Image (cartoon, rainbow, N blue to C red):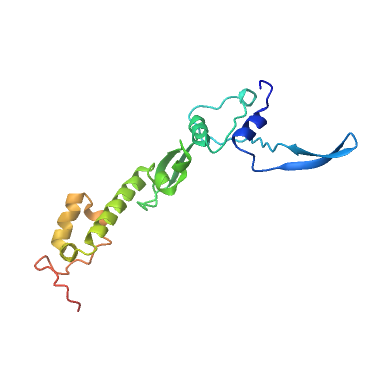
Length: 190
């Protein structure tokens, strides 16, 4: 078995998905021959690595399959580093973004967002709001309480101060002067 090829070993473990076969005449008889399907890819897949890659002549081909993909990705240390327009502040500033990928799941949008600090904070707020929304479903008392807080501008401003949101969060809230903090809404529509 010492002379067995890599392709024969892999065939025992997992049959190939692509079969290339052709007919050849051997000693006057038609014989079907099968060619192994092997693809070699040469590409710079590391993005902006911190460490410079090895010289091309020193690099070796690596067998990649579904079982070792994450290990190969981790060893390559793919990294992207950019300065992008800060659409969260919308003040013309730029945001430094550094993305590191260690496994295929790191390419999912939520995992990419978790690598950018402002987006990570927004994802956490989103998670908390979803949790709060699920608690209000079927809980009329909690829903009335939250509506009262949102309707009372004084309580709303105090809550903004407590959360550290200050003036920058004032644009999307309910209009000022909608109750002055004297009374909670009764739930009646006008």
